[in-house]
Amino acid sequence: MTEEWLLDRSSDTPLYQQIHDRIVGKIRSGAWPVGTKIPTQRELAERFGVNRSTIVYALDELSADGLIQSKVGQGTVVANNTWNVIASARTPDWGRYVAAGAHRPNQQLIQLINKAEENPAILRLGTGEPAPELLPARAMMLSLQNSAASLSLSYSEPRGSLRLRETLSRYLLAKGINAAPSSILIVSGGLQALQLIALGLLHDGSAILTESPSYLNSVHVVQSAGIRPCGVPMDKDGLLARRLGSMKRKTDAAMLYTIPAFHNPTGCLMPAARREELLHVCMHERLPVVEDDVYGDLWLDEEPPPPLKAMDREGLVLYIGSMSKSLGPGLRLGWIVAPVPVIDRLADIKMQTDYGTSALSQHAVAEWLETGRYDEHLSGLRAELRRRRGYMDTLLNRYMGSRAEWSLPQGGFYIWLRIRSPIQVRRLFDLALKEGILLHPGSVYDPGLDEPYLRLSYAYASFDQMELGIRRLAALISQLSGDNTQEL
Image (cartoon, rainbow, N blue to C red; front, side, top):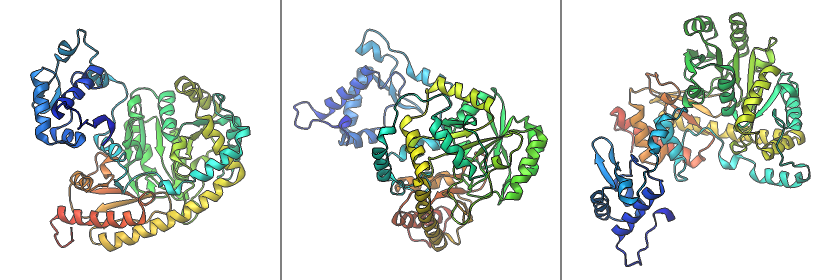
């Protein structure tokens, strides 16, 4: 129980009165403005650590005071006349402002997932980040201590630290990408890269083609800029390049967004031939490409084919990279490679929004790339991910062999699992969450998906958690499909 909900049980003031006063305080401070839906009786009882009867008494007092009221279909909300009771002046109706905001709210499922991830007791079977023990926190701290003399905490130039951009230029050359420092923009993670591209290069109402399913559907960063994602079918080798021409003409799409290396959420790797075909079609259609390569360093079997950007001879590809999946999501550091006029445009917008990516993160990444520590870390990370992938595959064969089908990815974090029984994945999500297991339903990545899919990740859960989670998942699937042979 947090201090926010802690009651003074040694006080002479009855518990119900303390609860009443605490809620009045939230209303008076504006934390719970007019129209706010307050937690249910059960939730309040759990938070305050009291019986529901005590909560009922406190809520009855609040209702009698005119502070709250129950509305059919809405639950109990802060009433319209609240501020006539506790103050002489009304405060703004923040609920109306929230509803009017230009940035679209996240999907309800994503909001539930984000909320559940705050709970350290949750078993996370689909989380798209490395487990904390896979990240080099201590080594990073020592590195920063040893290089503190060269650290600057001043603003960097609009494109980002010149030292880091020069270092990235050499790093990218090993991938076949010839990028001068002037054609690199440092950003605060891959999401900001997408936001800058949407705001700086596309107009309201534009369409952008992407794989179906796609990570792009799970975030509303481009949708909030008025951009419409349009799905292109996939097969085991990724996006069907031959469909791009007709899809572009049908949707009047302005760009293509694609994840060729270890696609999120399917984990598939686009082979070299398909990449060449995709780039050929896009050049013919004059369709710019946004290549998201944030998983490119996480190959587990053999190095992937060169990025699309390495084959780009016409400046058609905007390339996004990031350290979030390999070195640490908390660094919030990524980059865009693009023609200089595009970099200038996006850098100008970035300076208007955050005045530059963290100087500390830029220093740390430059240090790790220059000293070879990043390559050493990648070697160990790949080995551990390889072990985890193999173990999850073993568990799936043991518990889910007759219930689902999947392909083993060659890199990245994800296994795209199709459940053979026609169950309701949202019901599965809810049941699993009640048991403390967090899933990522396939509908998050394709709202029109008509088959039951899950995105599983072997990067976050421990080996023991994987075993427990997959075993319980198989039991819940059996329960929903009417097969009671699996032990619950």
